[in-house]
Length: 253
Image (cartoon, rainbow, N blue to C red; front, top):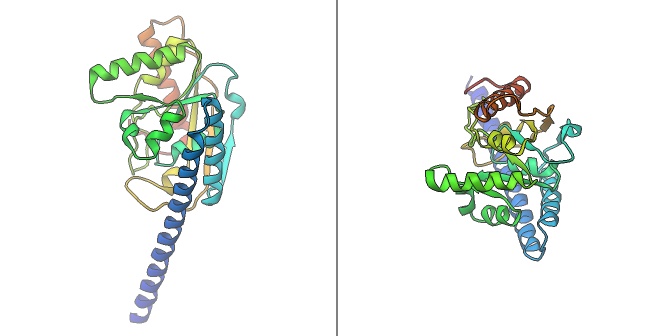
């Protein structure tokens, strides 16, 4: 029995060393590519070209970190204006989305991300829309700016949960993505991310290798026969239900 316990301890130690080595390698890959991308983007004047290079870098990160990426439903992305709403499960979700979305899409993210070293400057260079969550006045100003942006024809990507947690499950959706779609009279494309929570959930520091799947679903149009507030609520619930059906995680909303 003692020998079996010793073998189990040795196997656990080897597994731990393997996770640390891989995690250190993956972080090294990300930092090296992210710093190189940032330095390159400083000399690229056009935001569309910056987004193109960021997509190339994101795909390189995924490949070099041994995260096979499978994408389905790209045909559901309209050629024109739209809002993509994706579930949020991990720190790497933004990298995954950047690897698959066309460069015409801008992110809408919480304003706290603007203060994160390296990531904040990268997001700013990519034309990201930052939205305040805690100051109501600033949040209102940011929301109106986003509405003007989408009304002007910009395609946007939202994580409507606004945050993520370590436990599996889809959280409650905020209204921002759906107010934008109603204001612009454009469709919402639900997007399902699978596998990212297993790779790097909160609050784990070291990622693990793993497969990632991205699935775009049928676009959902606002119901113009309803008052605007009801349009937002119905669009939000229909989008959330569509994602939940394909996510294979519990409802935590």
